[in-house]
Image: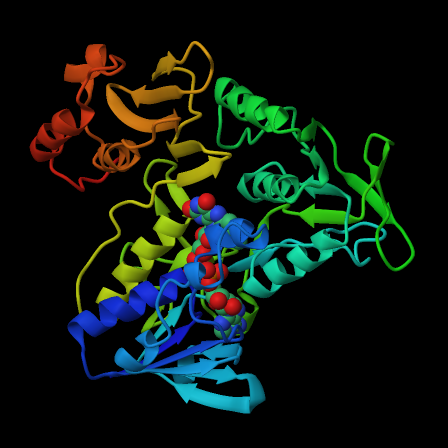
Length: 421
Ligand SMILES: Cc1cc2nc3c(=O)[nH]c(=O)nc-3n(C[C@H](O)[C@H](O)[C@H](O)COP(=O)(O)OP(=O)(O)OC[C@H]3O[C@@H](n4cnc5c(N)ncnc54)[C@H](O)[C@@H]3O)c2cc1C
């Protein structure tokens, strides 16, 4: 069997490990324009501000590829996928044929589109190279602007602040990360950022940037001018799907996959940020851009590529972020409200911890945890299994309630992995 894996990220590596568990001998060819060993992207902000070393980023050690008998075409980009020929065309016109192909080429930052967006000092943070560049530019800067109301935007603001730069943080919305957090939890995060000296400017964007060669000023959408010599942009990601343009593979905009991570083309699988798997809670195919999601999808894809039969246990949204030591976990339909939904909330008097369960007809469909997030995995399982919490609802918010023990019983009873409607 001949396996080709496009993308040496978390999904690609997990797939390779799963393939090798079932097929110790098949040929595995891996290609990636980034020549580094796979690294832990969520740690890039800590690396860029000097809190982590380069060595601490590696997900696998350099010997992994040789030990797993992987032909790593390091530094080579896949340009085109031709399912009819069972072949991939890579840079340099190299044609690589496959029996099984994994698309694990992730996503890239959406670029800022305004006058001055190409000035020096405008940075993005997705790759190790960009992290090194950001660090270099930051060392020459005094004032920074971070743009983007989600997980990466706040990480950029933290990074600039940790590096001692005066930092303005611009978010388009009227509060932090409304797509993931409810009002109470946004307020907790905003308080933490303000305490650290980050100036949050809400309902703001960048209309243009000015400077000679190097950025010096950001002109905001509300008409203000902020002096800044470093602009960090995190306004979303775009799946790296150009190589599929003429392939006939179903995309929308990620690669549409079934529960086995199979695409619409025979022998072609997808996993991670490029894949759009079915989310049973939202009832549609969605891209789940999370590290843990990519790992899980990579494992399932690899297992099935090597002849196994594993199904994704319901790709529910699951995000974990740590903001200045404040861990935040958001799961499933954590913002759902209206008829049929019930919210159970526990707040900390000083506003440093928060726990919210969202139930529909007694079943857990979403949750937000701030402060203590040790229950996040259990809650993910309960949501995935559509477990009926009716029997323990009254005790769920008690500090002393042992959710772990109760979940064990519930999952046993309701059948772990049962599919939610
Ligand atoms: C700064 C940062 C912080 C983050 N923080 C968190 C967090 O706190 N929690 C969380 O859950 N998630 C976080 N994420 C998201 C998480 O890192 C991604 O969801 C995860 O890395 C996706 O894994 P992947 O393997 O699908 O893609 P990637 O890790 O992006 O890997 C894809 C690989 O494919 C390669 N590639 C692209 N195009 C081609 C091509 N044409 N040919 C060959 N190779 C190609 C790329 O070079 C890359 O190496 C963060 C991401 C970033 C950038």
